[in-house]
Image 1: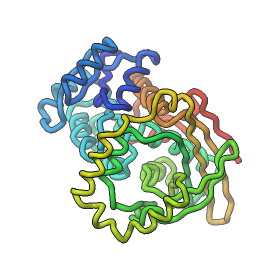
Image 2: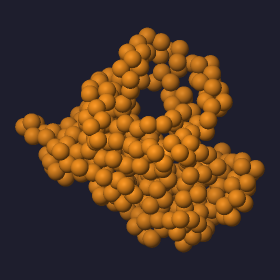
Image 3: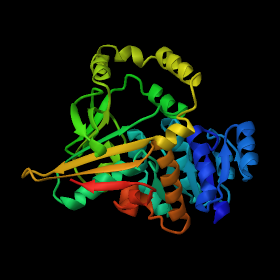
Length: 351
């Protein structure tokens, strides 16, 4: 079991956290990535096996997956890296997990679902903070109100994003936002709507809509046709974002995206260990039906990157134990709305 789990992108900020936690959780991944120097250095530090391969040559990817039963893919931006790894998993009969939060990747995996069922493998993007806590909140609320037609989710967390997350954000500069309306993903301006949300511990935060992964995944988990996802922002930031539609054309240029990525590369790798230990993430959700009946819940979890390391490994362990329904799956659909409560210090309260 231990030797059949491959962690790709192991030397990135989140990949390293996953690798470091894996042994504590009784797992022994094969570490993998494009850079021989970085992968070897981490493997020697953690005394783990490793493999070196990029994703641009299918034959090399196939060789890299030899003898592997599950891949946990942690090398973004997933808009570029998910498809070649998914295709390799389909060719080689390997279960696929990743830590993306990108709507396009979830929709791509859903489209590949029939092929995955035929191959007898599971495709599950989004095994980290994107989207386990929100996905589980969505299904929990659907269970409370089975005829719900509308879902709102919101989250608030402290700390800076990792370089990988920030780079993905840079690749999406100027692309706007998204909601789900009548079962279809609909492009809308970033910050299309805003509202005040009362999270746990009395934390009231101004929040705006963003194109979070649950616009995709919560639909597959719950069948609710109308979905909005919000995150906390400073009202001054929101006012700035509302003007963005006038210069999205500029943000979409390769020059602006390159400038943003250069600045990101010069910054810190991500939150410090102290910030991760002290940090918390707050999730809120609400559903309602055509009669106006509603249900709501709050969730508190560890800091986002800490949570990602745990939830992704927890799901990988389930897959290695044989619990991997074939086809495209979301975390909550495959493992239930209580999956998030398996994470240390996760607390959910119905309102």
